[in-house]
Length: 212
Image (tube, rainbow, N blue to C red):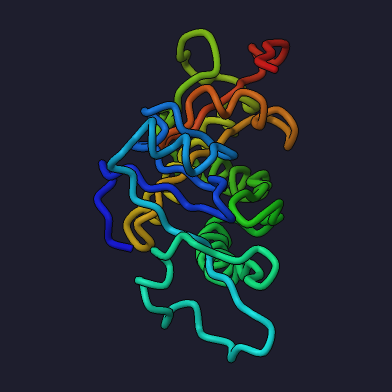
């Protein structure tokens, strides 16, 4: 909506927060926070309500909706039903960028996807077209020189994720974070530790570290 990243923005669904900008989180606001509580925590917060539609109303393209309608907080829960088309469409744009770098993209939700970069990392490894640098923060421990094939593949994965995040930011203006590890299940628990516009790695050496 054109707001600066420093502006605390909260997306509401029937007086409850469902999305909170990082600027707003600094005030202690999180998903599921109540509208009245948010106003007390951050009086200057900007509220946007998810699109809604009523039975019998003509469908309106979410990209053509009046912004003033989105800023209207009062909704009738019995009559105004949530329409998440805008978020689904934007989510697909993000995934389209991911698909440019990765052949296997599994959408987990409107704002989360799993990517299997094995094939792409192996191809880059075999061609030796990678940098000797971790483009990531570590979930624990200190950065180390990647010498084994397994560690180099993970390092390449961080470089690919870094490229994807940068393109998403440049083209769609979204910040996003990610977790890089040796299977699909490890990144999720520790991802929340370092979330704002960055990605985290859990290498083989730290595979027993748990942040659950």
